[in-house]
Length: 255
Image (cartoon, rainbow, N blue to C red; front, side):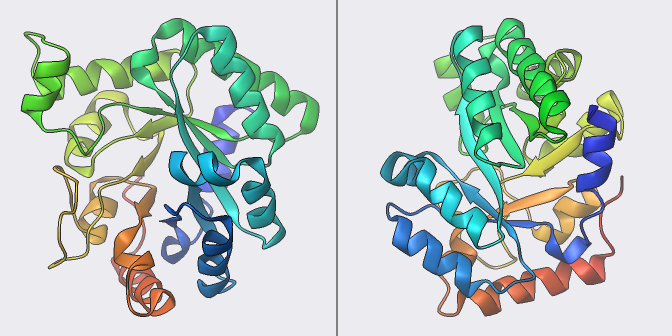
């Protein structure tokens, strides 16, 4: 399956179901309980480093048995051979999306894209490979401290996005604040998943660059990752339903 067909298939998801609930827990039992509480209509969930480190591949299998679509957010960042093999293992687990740091470089992103392409040709399906530009938890000062550069933050993000698309990635993980500029640079084709989403009036937690669900979709996001506003709510299912209804009335994405 080529990336155009893969992205088109994912974009067939109704607007209200494009929320990826972040199951950022240290327990497989808790993650599975949360997934059950979301209801059958809300299918996308995120398995990140904390949960995968605690429960491993078994939790992905358990979520798949609950008919959940898994966004495997492990942010691969290693040598090309290693990330290619890791991406293939993620595909074998049944993930529908997986992530790689764009700062891993051309060799690593290309290797992962090639490996997933080969997997897709053999199996008839594969996960979308999404490149993380700059983490939404990082402020501009922190980015400059870790990696000094004369380029501005938007220039860095733009360069990484161009590189990821050129290497064969299917899309990006980036802040909604960066999206209008990026859509102008790379166009409507790449799939975009946006973290750092907070409903109006909620706290920032450890995020620096955040936006509301409606604003993110209007900016061109395809899927939204939302964690604590759902999982730490008194009624997680109701919180998710409210957010889904907001997206339905927003009318979907601008892509």
